[in-house]
Length: 377
Image (cartoon, rainbow, N blue to C red; front, side, top):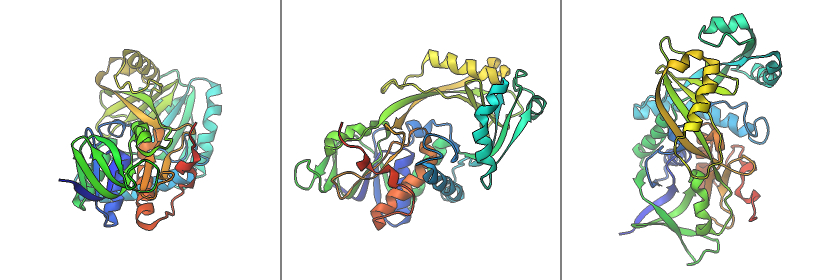
């Protein structure tokens, strides 16, 4: 028996679940198909830092969309927690960028200017004594640093699960399945309309299709006959139990990054490697991350390692997402390529794609991410 759905979404990461959630809020029933588990890939392992002021394309072509997505996050958390009972750990973050020599301060000037000029954000210089007073465990080798506040944080796994659960409560279906192709109305792959999603064990007929396949987006190229240049960027994180008291600040400097979690853990990372689809945690990354983390907090050399994770982020040639209608197709949409900003951008992706499906347009700043900007190489 053939299943039917108004919209089929392929991929149950943060992007796919956000599309399902915003469609459900608009009264549109979607079926999310995921080969493994909801948030089973990068969306479930991301550090969850939401900084809308900096990153690839920020300030720049992604700046407006990052800010819109950040604002959507702040509005979403209470609703999602009330609807699902899940604790998203949404919070505003205080950070310290640690300087080890005077030259490091010049690299922090952009952050100081951006945070100081933005409502709801702040930043100020710290001398070595002030850094030590904020937390005595920070390296005594610091010559100062930059304090900033305004970025947000969220538990990426709980957040993605909450999107899925809230969508289900409003009528969405989330199911496992391996997608192996698309059914075309004209019987061949020449654009036009897609009428169904082929699975290994059947078919789901539908009016529209959203491909939110993350690093695996290229698998859809032969299904559509179009170019979808998304490649996997591997990242690894170490999670430690740091003895009390809990760390109150995210830290960076000396090549390392430390993320303070509400449960008292600290997450250390992040690596960036082009390793294809290798998702194995590596000993070389463990050593590299630990060495960088210990530079910031020497006490971490003796902390208990709780977990070592590896995941793949979807990256495009210009480091901008691919959002919108697939070239040549009237009812296929791409929602992929958010790179290292996937959790931050996910509500904007979800609302933007839902708007395109339900209204034919969106007020969100996604025009720079049109899939048609890429042509076949």
